[in-house]
Image (cartoon, rainbow, N blue to C red):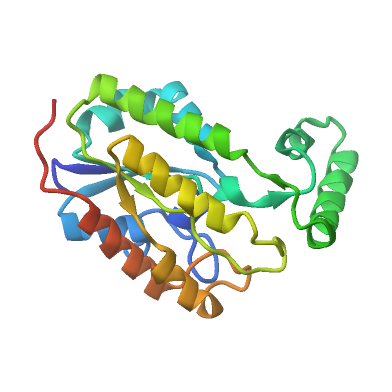
Length: 238
């Protein structure tokens, strides 16, 4: 344990390995690789499928995040935005409303129908919608940075670029290149370091999880090293 910390706002890439979800403290995961190289402990805030909007909600609604993790952070990595780019045939709110259906039998049927319908519909349509529109992604990322800088103006911040994928559940990747370009523009406009993971992940997708999205341990190690290089030495807490 150290008295220095890396705060990571992430999605499932932050805790999912090549076979399954792992304990967040697993030393092979990219946040832990970065923390080890930086010589800091990791405070990870992440859930499966989280978008930039979910990260903003966590930052502002979870008292542990804004009251404990943020004040003690020496670095912050915004590791969300990659799930925002995934194609969907209908607005995301419709999928997110399924858990609120009262009867378990109907809820399970809807969830099964959704999982079965998404791949063929996306394949036929090319994925007409993103999980979160790019304008909304940019807006929530901006809110995150503005909110953090209002409390910690000198905190070094980096953005993890959108990860490429190649899997059967999301068979269209047409939104990926525009998402990468938008992330680069956003980071530059807001003075945030950009962690380009495209050359690290894309050539190694064949050796990643069969879902085509989650990474091998080799990729986790490479991404963790890239995150480390995005940060300058700590400039002290405000």
